[in-house]
Image (tube, rainbow, N blue to C red; front, side, top):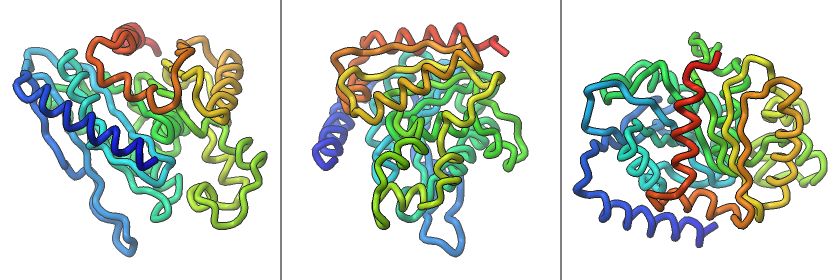
Length: 287
């Protein structure tokens, strides 16, 4: 994990140097949720990357970082926001509270709160509040999918689910219930700090158990050489999807390990960008 973070930091620095004179506007460290009183959970913030051209409202792409639910930071992925903004998309990277300070449902609620803030404020950055897409890598893919499928998070915020599509990048935890049951981790394990020892909570945290016919379209990227647990949960998730919908696209990247699945987006001409733009364009009118 340390090597992974060092690599991302290096890429973020390179990204800054390579993008300094591009015509995009960066608005950073915007608070979308205040510090949670009575806890150690700090204020949650986001970064916005927007094209300078505001002649028309642009589609909105929210990215939730990975890091095993207990590490990571939005700013490590500024390169992703920079690249997307230069492709005429308003991109947002969010932070969320991490384990052990927060459980999975607090992370999910914080992520939903960021979506609400974006829905209410993104017009001033040139984004279209009616075209909001959400994405995440690894643990971030889990959170993005969970809040998009389980409407209780948006219901509690008294808004309709505004997500028009989900882009899953080697998402972890799609069958957290099955994984935790199989692994039988002992008390104190980092995953049990995040998901508790309550099996009902494991199922509540599992996107697989929240599939329904009215869920948003999905674009699913999976690395062919990723972790076995991600392979297994993604395969189960994808095999179950046709019972509810045909509005999904699955792209298997045969040679890719888990970390390169997100690092690939450092390269501005990576073909996955075309896949994302095509998905956003074709799914915008799907009900």
